[in-house]
Amino acid sequence: MKFRPLPLAVLAGLAWSPLLPAAAPLPPTPEEQKAMSPDAVLTKLMAGNARFVAGEARDSNASARIEATKGGQYPMAYILSCVDSRVPVEQVFDHGIGDFFVGRVAGNIESTEQLGSIEFATKVAGAKLVMVLGHEACGAVKGACDHVKMGNLTTLLGEIEPAVKAVDGFEEDQRNSKNGEFVAAVVEKNVRLTMADLRERSEVLAELEKAGQIKIVGAVYSLQDGKVTLLEDEEA
Image 1 (tube, rainbow, N blue to C red):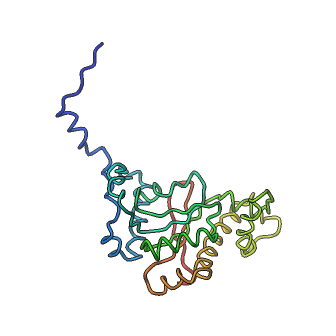
Image 2 (image 1 turned 180 degrees about the horizontal axis):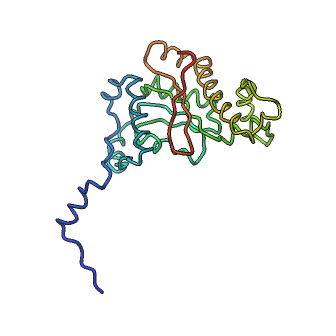
């Protein structure tokens, strides 16, 4: 049986089918980035996550975005995330090439390298929002809860230990990775402590936030439904 190619008119109709996802807008221009407020950027991120959760994510528009960003980049946010493969940051917020700086390290901790990267992203490159994004059932947090020792991972998990120690309300035999409630509490505490450390360890970030030029926020991603939940800022 021979298959005949579809007429151009039919192909054109399919290309504009309302069943296909709308193309995402191009990444910010210098003027658009400059005009954005930190709160406006946060609103964009959370609206994107709502689309992601609802299964209404837009087409990535990758080719157009590559073309638009080949001469420069003007991202609106820096997202400090865990390395977990189940948390694809740009997809989670229904954005793409050119929209965010993304720093990834197990347990979303603020290493010196991450601090320098965030300072560059905000002070030099103009990003308006810094989000520390933890996630449900984080393996690094679980390792810290169990005081795992293994090569260089030992040092990394040591950075999460303060969050483990700071969580109250659990008996000693409940303070381990088998207790999902305890792990969830440590995940949140770790995000909050990372936010506090960003402000304490970086005069650059602290000054930018004090001047209202950036906003530092914390959030937790759900592996169950893809929803990002903002955490109340205890220092706000």
